[in-house]
Image 1: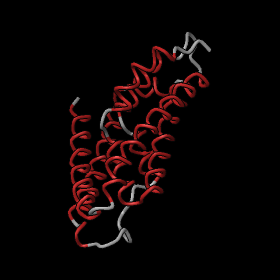
Image 2 (image 1 turned 90 degrees about the horizontal axis):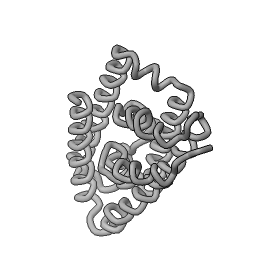
Image 3 (image 1 turned 120 degrees about the vertical axis):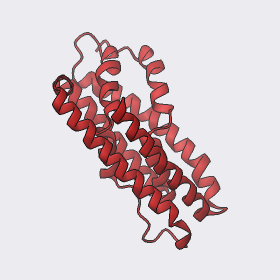
Image 4 (image 1 turned 60 degrees about the horizontal axis):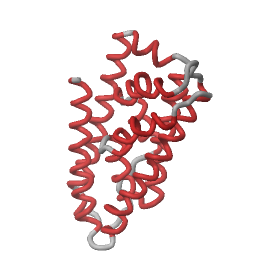
Length: 200
């Protein structure tokens, strides 16, 4: 296989542990949908990571990036999608005090988490330029799926831990205030991330 896991971990950790779109969506999913929302969002994000591994392993990512028109269209679609998710989170956060339960409150779906991941230009570039360096001399779909599995495990452990610390432990005190701040700040962060992706 020739996979360089020891070299991959230091390259992966800053990406997997830094706040980004996945972090924001997982926090919102955990807050609105409880543990089911947390795992649904994690599953969608994991599917997105595996999708990137398959696409790069089959050479499709290289074709996308080599065509400026296709890559720019994907980048624009990703930006618009993250902007939309950001505005939905802000709207949900600002209306939090109008609700007294989670009934009827929007939660992040598996499909939304998957789309947010696969349309993220940073994830595409990360798999093409960084992950490919650790996939062995000949690469291959299996090698990329192994590295994606490591990525999923590290990301999941981190996001489960942080969501328990930030959401589930504090949710017992005042869930409406927590929802207001997490979703509003999370939505603002998603908008910032999407605009940053567009301009860089």
